[in-house]
Image (cartoon, rainbow, N blue to C red; front, top):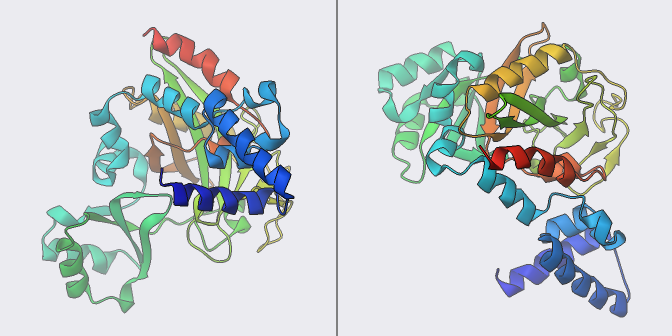
Length: 332
């Protein structure tokens, strides 16, 4: 890591999470961070997001850190070829086509006539996505009537830096939409598939909602996440953002988070279990899905490299839970 970037990153997170400190405490924070890095593999984000500066050794052992996250990856998702089924949006949409619930088009393999016909029939809004986009980066929502379709086709086809797909706007229904109507509010469910025992472990679940009229709900793009109880589907935590600010109600809609029950939760779990079994070669995945409000669900994407922070930001370490599951998977 670049030394200048390290200090800039450390100071940025320290100011947000700890605030102003005296010179001695400042130095001790650096020493303590390097200790947590050596012993626990904590990144700068881990150290501040999980409040390692307030925890002792045993408390820090409870958390999935950057190093432990890569251990999960190495055991569950060893094949670089197979994880491309998640990372490449064309491959993902093709592989999971029966679960998508929306129209889409691979720009790189389409003629202009096909492209134009798709745009004419797509409705008022189209989403343009780079095939390797992540965290909401590289995703653009466009009003169709404002576009020069011919110029857009040329632009996307001639972009040597990436390939693109077009996707139909998803209509969100029901009470989940009420939290933030400007974004598609997704349910993020982390699964680990123990193929030896044919069991899909649902590790964690969160509702992710947008904020400030942004169409993205991603935690790292300014969104808010709320923890969902896996057994009941009831949201039991305040909303939190990537800086661990807490929200009892959504700051835009004033809709309360705690106590809200995800509609058709058992159907939701059954849906994601079926989806996870569809890809047994990638066993650790963070799935993003949307409820249609009638007991059916739409699959948005699967993230083989789903971040560990959204699972633990509400002061709940999950490393022990992962270790118990990984014991079986290691011997498959």
